[in-house]
Every structure is written in C-alpha cells, then in structure tokens.
Length: 177
Image (cartoon, rainbow, N blue to C red):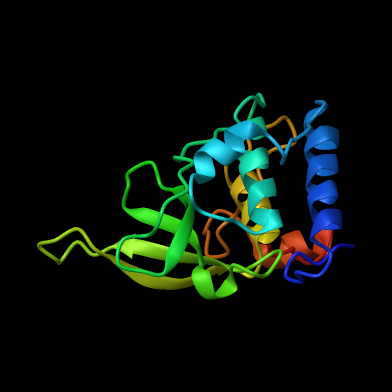
C-alpha cells in the first residue's frame, strides 16, 4: 500500500495513480511531464517535479471518458500570497496552490485559498492545507470527479441514507484520502 501523505516516493505514487486509472477505467493512461505544453503553462514559474506531473496528469485526464475535469488548469501567482496555483475552481473563487516556501520539495503540500466575499477588492484568504502532497491532491481530485461503472469514491460520512455500522460490517472500514 502506498501512503500518499508521504512525499518521499512520489514517482511510485504517480505510477500507482496511473495504474489505478488504467485498471479501473480500462484505458491506456499515460502522462508526459516533459511536454512543452507544461513549459508554456508554467511560464516563469518553476514548479517541483511532482507539480509538473500534476499538470501532465491534468492534461491527460481531460481526455479520459467518465472523468470530468471541471476546473481551470492555471499556473500563476495567487493574489496576495507567496504561492503558485495548480488549479483554479471553475467559479474562480478558489485556488489550490503550492506555497513558495515549499517550492524546493519534490512533492509539496497543496494549500487552498478562498475568495474573500466580504472584501470590496478581489482578495483571497488562506483556507489551510488541502492535501499533504501533490500526489494526494491529484488522487483526491480524480476520485472526486470520477464517474464509472464501478461508481464513485466520495461519500459524506454524515449521510442519512446509509447505516455506517452495517457498511463497515459488510465491507470493512472506509479509507480516507
């Protein structure tokens, strides 16, 4: 089992994600982190290796049937913060980004920034860490928007439509990503 909260073996984590997508959806899923398209998206920003893999993942996953890439792949400075975005929510009110202080890490944590609706100016507030690593962020994002014959993977624990104790008895404890 690969721990996605551990940043040390990020190449194996990406290989595991690719394998999961290929097996679960019966597709040939491959990424190219050396793509010139990634260089164009990054512009003057230098991203850690796993963040480049994220962009390659995002570009490749847009062509996967049964997966909805619903947000905007944009690499830019987060307004008012020392961070570089990996993704902007489709409504442009939420950034997922890497703080500059973590830019030298190969698989850094991903922070969230939310639009301050109370401000008269466009500014974003830190919403804290979204994922402990870029690979954990990518897997979470993919599983959140996956639609397949095998079903989705995200279930709110507070749902009144199921009995958690019965599910645990039948299937074992749930996994949290």
